Image (tube, rainbow, N blue to C red; front, side):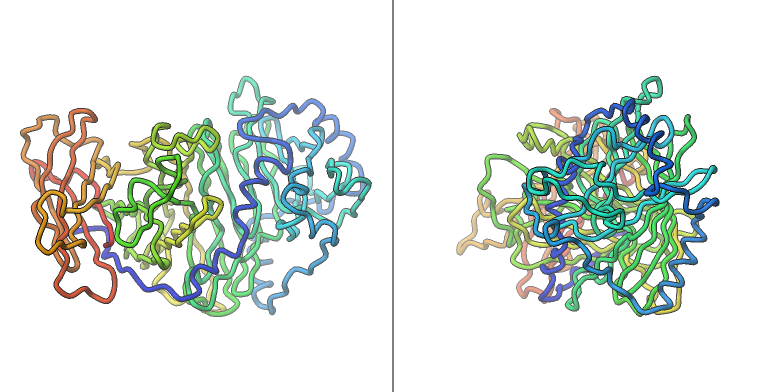
Length: 559
């Protein structure tokens, strides 16, 4: 059956789980508490403007360069870095900051008057260093009038009881920052946080009325490989002050890590749908076995996809589902594939989806009903998906790789998706690419074209219950797949053609029926295992056609 790729499910290295050594769980808490602003809180910029006017002439924010830095200048700096041996950032964090526990770090609050206005509709708040957020980033603010380094000042923060009376020099720097925006042009000072850069090359973005969920990254290096993953860091940010009426903001960033250095330009446009136009120049110091471009990182603990999937253990939880994303989409010319996420296997799972050319991929949250989660605080139904759309010459030949890492806690981001180029990544051979990140809420969404009906649920159970065999065959599974969206016929008697495939064994006895309660269609198919199981996983595929035309995405799963 035709599809956007041939899925290959590879055996990961034994050290695959250790890649989560980076502390993503702490980021979740820091976003809500370290600077005292929670989504969708509003910022009062009156005192912030007063502070900015009185502090611009202080030594910590003096002009450092008359000319704004350009993306090409950052790229030249990255190229020079890559030509020299990597130098890890020195461990200069004072001991009392390094030793902060979660609660003490949460007690550090940015003073409201320390918010930095960026034009009339944007503003910035820095994160303090401490605890798990030990590395320093430099923040530079620039406009046509000039450039000034935004240095640390102890007066910016209330350090909390554990650090009462402590003062630190401007060289302490910051751990990262967040940006707020006035979504209502008539009330530009009523601002909501929508963008965060914090930790390695991670950043998070949300659309209006959404809450933070999955993260994007600048780059992924050797994810899931036995030698272990690298986490390059954004070390310096140049943030351009927008014009007063501007609805977009541009951020330049310098990346550095053991295997490569890079320059980034992020042009961010907030809104009901937020967009980030990304341009990057990467300069390898040495060869990279697996370079992940436009990587996305998310959390899938459990949902309707497991425990019926082979090897997936059940979760004892009052909530029906817990996840920030429930599937991967990969789009190539003429087809769009949906792979439901699974957690609870005994070992990490790595799947590859060849795509040449790639039109887009993303981790999406398709389940949008509160009743599916019943979590008043987490609001999983309001968490965005992220869609990656290549621009310019595209990403070239390669594959989208999906990493599903076993996890028993929702504090761990255990899902990674990235495009891995086919061409070798070698020292001295720079890469340039451009793409757009788009937040996705309820579907159908304009970013995902063509308008095919989408997979909205995958349920799996024993096929023995309907027609038991003697002796029983536990590996017989009944797959129930629901499709909804444009192109599906309204007539329950319409002729629906079903295309099925299995890399081993067989999907048999398909039956499709219209679901009057949703207006969609449901496909039933039984998987019968092969007499001799292959060494890897078995890949299953299905899609529906009507009147000689494909009307649904390609459903894809592994057994």
